[in-house]
Length: 352
Image 1 (spheres, rainbow, N blue to C red):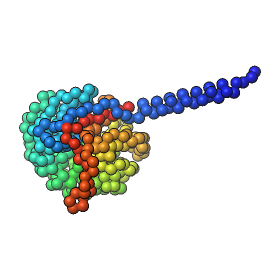
Image 2 (image 1 turned 135 degrees about the horizontal axis):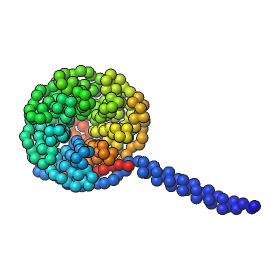
Image 3 (image 1 turned 120 degrees about the horizontal axis):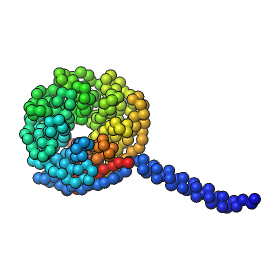
């Protein structure tokens, strides 16, 4: 039988093209990509654009967005605005204590914490904190709220049920982000000391101090509660490090891009995320508690350095705005910076 070689070549080429197309399609499905973009505009009563922490309440399907003089609360599935908590000077973190139907917002300019009702979003009261109140977390083990205060190198502790200040802890360094392990320990990144400090959430005493080298100036922090792994991301040098939460042992480290500000761990997928000012989300996978691998780098937008993770859908929420071009060098020889343009605030949602 005579073989049509041209037909064979054409058939092989078609099969090869189909294989490549299928591979590319599968890769695009498996890779994180932009799912939605929600513009919101300027914050009430503000002429400057500022945004900070994002907290996703996966069970209630709400996303809390720190937005300068307000906290925006939006629907996690549609992006629709549910409500605003207003009257703030410059808010930063948002902590949720669902068992008491209360939320807590840190206001760094006012040096206080605003307490609000999770159902109605109405303000219930406030608690005194120190200047530069920043990250705020709720610890279910002790039923306490911990407020990180950068300039005073302290943490204010508040009773979540009563809203009363219990104590101020001197940390010995400027705190950034913190996580609670649910067993009675709070882990805190000390940016000015290049270390993580562990605090007993019942005695309110410092238990341990561990270096984060080879990373430096640690900001973002997340944790795998089951396997007791901390994921600390720093800026100088820009790296993500994996640390044993019981011994402080350095497990592994990875370089990342500049300006990291948030990290998250997804127990459902084993993925670790670190978002940076340069417009990238670095994605890693926990292959085992002692082995981690690079998965991909998601390209977002410049300034999208804060992030929240939806544990139900596994989607990532980041926010940003338009930014001006580089300014002239500032006084004292400081590097020029781009500033966000008022009224251009938006949320970006990424998923698979």
